[in-house]
Structures are given as C-alpha cells and as structure tokens.
Amino acid sequence: MTKTKIIFWDMDSIMQFMEIIGRHDYEAELVCGERTVNAKALLDVVSLHAFQASELRIFSDSCEDLLKDLDLYMEQYKLEREFAAC
Image (cartoon, rainbow, N blue to C red):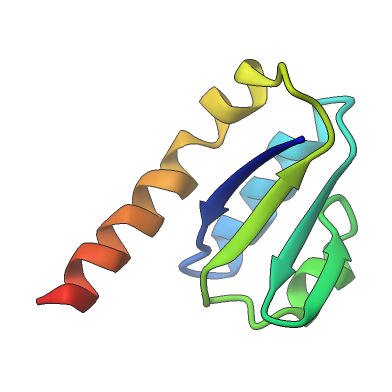
C-alpha cells in the first residue's frame, strides 16, 4: 500500500483528480478524519470535507505513474502546510 497526503482547492481540482485517478487501474481510497471513501467515486469524494487535507491510500506498492500524475495535489498539500506554519 502507498500512502500520500493531498488536498483539493476547488471543485475543478476534484473533477481533475477524478479524471486522473480514473485513468489508472489501481484501487484507492481517501481518508479524512474518521471517514474513508472510495477515491474513484465522485459523490464519495465530494462528501468528504473536500477542501481539507486527505490521505490517499493506493493499494499498490508500485504506482509511480499515478503519483506522478497527482504531483500537483501533493505539492498543494505541502504549500498549505507551509502556509499554516507561518
């Protein structure tokens, strides 16, 4: 299993995430607090606290292609953390 932190910044970012993750065959889930949802189900993703950081769990140890495609979401998470620390 591969885990990474991501964040969405608006509805378009969620839609783009859905496009990206839908192109890959990996099973994945998003975790936000106590809630865990299917990362490939739009209504599930939107039902999370969408603009808070979430942990993306990908059920594969070799998913570099997906991680590369999601780099923007991981970078945005890092920027949010840096901003919050100021």
